[in-house]
Length: 131
Image (cartoon, rainbow, N blue to C red):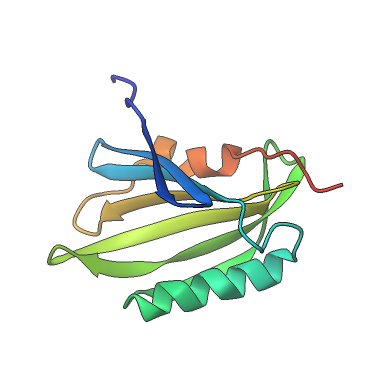
């Protein structure tokens, strides 16, 4: 299977994202050096959940998770949303770095089966940890 070509773009003054639709799935990493860097994972999860729900999505599962080969702490969220008249299944991992927060997302239309390699890839997120 061919590797995805990723596109990096600035989506705001403090936010960058890299992502690509690949094999009927979206793999996306977003970094934001806004005011949340240095906060608690639970609070970051609550903020992300609130934003997701405002956009019409629903979060069905969330909990702490080990990322980066089990060496770092992250926050896992799973849910659904609708875009372009299509229902999507969404899984995301949030992490707090030294100066930025990160979100690695795997999303796919619910009509497609899970793509395990993409699904597992979000757990490989590694960040420079806070001091």
